[in-house]
Each structure stands twice: as structure tokens, then as C-alpha cells.
Length: 314
Image 1 (tube, rainbow, N blue to C red):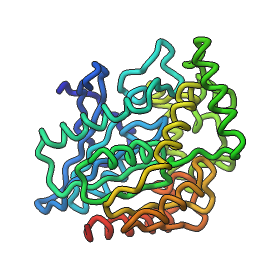
Image 2: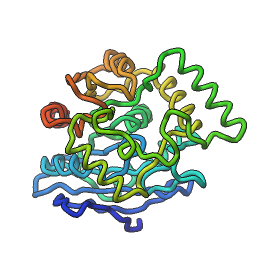
Image 3: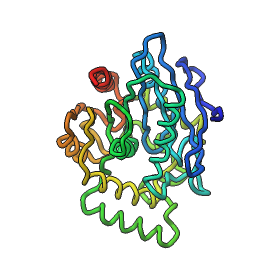
């Protein structure tokens, strides 16, 4: 492992993570961050799977809350974002050629957790795109005792007839060598959502302080951000959501949180999966948007309290 940078805003008093680079089995360099539990008591370890466009620094406040509860927290920059290797010459689009490649990144997380002998039991916390990657990882035998999801990408928020059209266009773009280009309407290659959208119109959070933190992070660390999704990413993501929807749910205790104002991922896909998940629980949070873990205090605390109780009971 090679030491990696971990960024902090000047007025951030939270304990920093230890960050390091590891190499996946296909040669891609990945950045992983580790927060150690505070105090002598240990409750276990949380493997944290971020969403699309994200980077490990974004989760420092969540990790701080979890380390206060005695958990080690291990998070990753997925390939193609954050400080992990970008996958094409233009580093800005959110891009992937095979969605299954994210499972290579998961394998590295598990290897790192083992090498550091992180305390057990291990639990999973996944947000948005990380929820899609996590569902596949659980089906592949990810060694965790329980799973908690925040607005997982088990479907993308498109009208039903648009899914087929989007797949077809993405496939065509790939065949003519444009698969790495940004899909119109997903944000330009050079765009950064939190810098280009107003707080009042954003789809992520109703918490103005958290929104301001995201804006400051993106302005201070533009090298960590990415723009809109590539044609290849869209096609691969739609295909993976469709593939997973046809498979049975894993036999593991599960909690999933869904905001009533969700407009990024498909809310019905989350409800459908929750209904057919043995020992699964759906927590619907009134007024919450996509980013439940950085929502207003009351909404965020609903999920955090339920998640901690879920982990303790597993």
C-alpha cells in the first residue's frame, strides 16, 4: 500500500482518515480511506460504498458518527472517480466499460479490511450507485453480517419507455466509438452538479449547511469531482439494475431508507426489492431527498438511529 492524500477543509475539526492507494487485479489504482474507532470499545467495522460522482472525504462526518459508536469505517473511491484511476483520457465523465469491474474494487476493500484485521462483525453501508454495487457484492458472498442502504440505485429514475431507448442509444454510441462521451442531460463533462445547481433546485438535500459543505469541497478540490455520466456508464448501469432485479434477495438482515422526495433513483424499484427481501425493512422518510445521510438533522437522525440499531441487532 502507498500513502494517499486525504483532504480537509480549513475549519474541519474532525479526525482525518488514513488514506492509501491499492492496486486492483487489473492494474487500476484505487484510493481507500480508513477511520479507526475512537476509544477502547469496538463494535465492528462498516464497509462504506459511496455513490456516483463521490469521493471518500464527503463521508468524513458519517464516519465520525460511526467511529464514536465504536466502528471502524472503510470507504473507497470507485474506479473512475475521486483519486482512483480515471478510465479514459478525458477524466471528467463518469465512465465505466463493464459494471462488473466495480466488483474488482470491492475485492480490494475486503482484502484491505482483512490485512488491517479490522474488528468484526463487518457491516455494509451503501448509498446510491454504491447500493447497486453492494447488492451484486452481497450476491457474490460479501462477508458482512448486515446491510444498510441509503437510496440505493436498484433502478434509475426514468419513465418505463425511456429505459429501452436509453439502452439503445448507449449501445449505438459505443459501437461508433462515442461510449465515453457524456450523455446529454446528465450534466456536461466539465460540470460539477453542486457548483452548477442552486440549493433551491437541488435534488440531493434540504440541509443548506450540508449543501454549502459540498459546494466548498467541490470548489477546493475540483480534481476529486466528475461530470455527467458517459453513454457506456448509462448503458451498463441500466443493464446491471435489470440483471439484479431478476435475482433473489440475499439472506442477510437489511435496512433500506427512501426519501419521499426521491428523484434520482427509482423509488418503486427500492420498494419492490424491499418487499421480497427476507428479514428486510424499508424506512420511508418524509421530506427527504436523495442524500438522506446529509439531510436535515431530524431526517438524517431517523436513518442513523435505525441503522445503528440494525447493526447492533445483527
